[in-house]
Length: 234
Length: 374
Image (cartoon, rainbow over all chains, first blue to last red; front, side, top):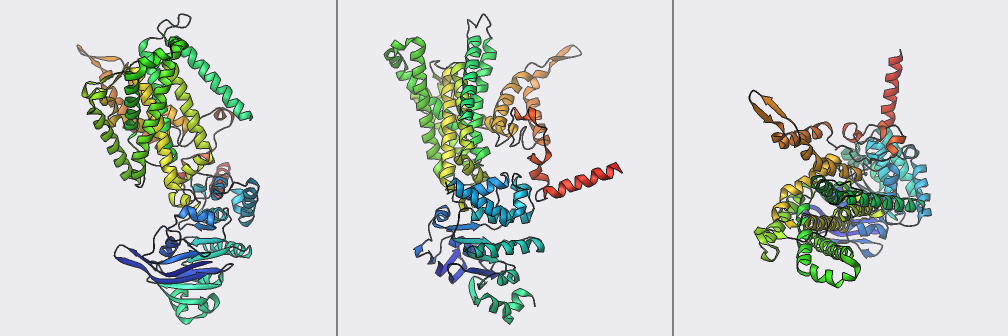
């Protein structure tokens, strides 16, 4: 579904990503883990064309998408929940979700998807007409995720959904990821919380200083001694 | 449908009120109730400033693009339309003579308004496309720079009077200015409430997230800038044909700042706030002008001489006491009379208790009140 072929990205003279080859198949949950500054966000930014690869290309369903502006990717079926949540603070929860369906015009479908979002995160239903900026970090993350689903994406890009959240909320977020997967949406999950990410994904890539150093089945990687030592703290 | 009818009725009522006020302002007066020129001019300038403030509010308050060059686009509208009326106004008036004196003058003014709006919109497009790639302070500096460039270019065009100023026929009266103020408010209100408006607000809230929702942020930023500039142009046309004289001094950067002050005082991102700001900023210096003198020993100290100092102090105090403006992002309306103001809807909450769940706040309050009972 999504393929990165030999992608290298530089910020000026500094190379941030070197020769990245990454594949996300339809229906999969693939996670990209790595420490701070490993290039996780850079990879997502390259996929959404906020950055352009110096070498290589990004393909989505057989079409090259590197160079296509981010807003045109939404109608193609890619949605992104940005790092730091990026909720529209002065809009209500409902208005935030409506913005998620910005490219759609089928009112019935939008209403149905909004109900689905509220079912997935009942907390948001309670907060429906509250301004998103007044919500807690976890609730804002729920808004960001529910919002990104409103465009009915085939591929969902999640940038550090558990960043800065309490363990209990992290649990809720990962349960939601399982639920989204069960509904058939493909997910590329970028995470620092390697433990949770590996337990809620099919395959994983480990990024270190802009290179993919390990890849494979998430369960196997979770048991790999090198991963355990470097990322799981065991 | 029903809300549409309601809006139409409100519009007709406002125009009727404007007609009566206009008749009162005219020299003969309406049933002998003449308002003197000074108050009439003040009302007209309030209406012009409402056009300027609401249109700048679309760019600054709703789209979140900090532009401080609004006077430049006002100047473009004023001078382009004035050039048209000075050179072709009389000829057009005679060819529309069959509509009577007032009708012909109105046609000329309407054409002048279309010209002013279009030329100002074009200027907005030319300035907007390159400069809206910038953000925050940089955008502010560039728009300020462009406004000054526009002013200085006009200053050096002899065909519009250059440094000696430009005599313009007085086609505009209070009725026209009022009608266009109403049109501006209605149009911008509808834009803000539409899907386009939601896209603009999402850009203000988080540009990256807006882009991720599929909003073409560049296009919408330029659109809002062009619409704002067009209305600034209309304000310029009305100003030119009401004031009957144009000088580039009227469009210095201090004019742009005045418009900024209106929306900051009234509340960025509030339609009614911008209108209130326009009224306050236009009236306040005039009210302060009437302050009484104080007898100190033999001499009389005129407090009114300090009016600009007092004005500045009032602005500073407003910003200290209500940094989000008088109304913040709220709207003033009849609903204020119906329901008590609720804390949870306040916009000031954003700054102080960011990230605190409301449930916890109300729980805390509940606990406190229970403690109070004990």
